[in-house]
Image 1 (cartoon, rainbow, N blue to C red):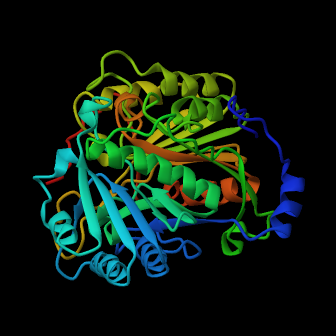
Image 2 (cartoon, helix red, strand yellow; image 1 turned 180 degrees about the vertical axis):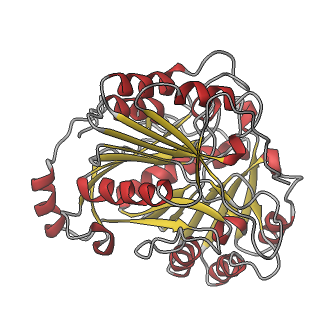
Length: 410
């Protein structure tokens, strides 16, 4: 499957791409996960989030850029070495900058204050309500304009080993430059600084990379990656809005569509009107014979959301289930033990990995980032990752007419 971006033509076919990758410096892609401790959801060939973040930061020579919803840790957390690595990077002359959402400034003040109090580290809070009406919900890092990470992982101790997460590391300078341009827009906005004349030019469409050999499973590792984001009206020049590309991904499916998100709500609970773009694409796919599987977190067991899920599940060809992660043996931890990954795979040919939950405001009002991945190796591996959860004891099918009790979150 090829996603037909209108902003740039497809230049390299996959066979030609394979040869091109062999003739230049390696451009690589790695899938990265977190899994809740005491579960069977660990994928042995996917590195853990904290390990990849440490590797990236410790390898930094000039600059580390981070954008996150918030930053929070706890004693003896796996995230603490990451925080120390940022301080150590600053001590050796690396410039470290972080943009966080203004919405959580008072809720989680400790880590931002600790980092901002370190020489060489700057932290800014961005009130995205002034720009799009939403929040900063992106989660990404860029190192030395070469190496990037984005995914569902918040800068949160729970996202390291108490929550199911999925992200992607991309080692490709053009991709990193484009993501850094997005960061620069938000950094300037947070500091109430003018944007540069002419905007930020950074096209990261259809870049050729090679999937990590341990994850390719003997398939051709050639992958085409496109960086995209939201909202549409506040993106760097050359960066595509992700919602139309995600819809196009689903519309192009012929056999299967697999979706996993924290929350799915097309009913307009927070946003006016029905979110027909994604809901319509899924229903249309099922109507033409595509098998549609949807996994959502049990946090969706709440009034105003469950009715929409039951309605979607009533369509022939669409199966919707909750992912229910048992409480830790060490006791209840607020806002954890949940499936937080955001993924869509079509036909094991192409996929989307992002930071948006599937509600309208994430795509139209808030800052989010995502990637479209084209290639059988990466899409097949992601399908396998999805299937492991679908076939696990943690899946609970959505039942018609059932009244659900919302789980305890905090």
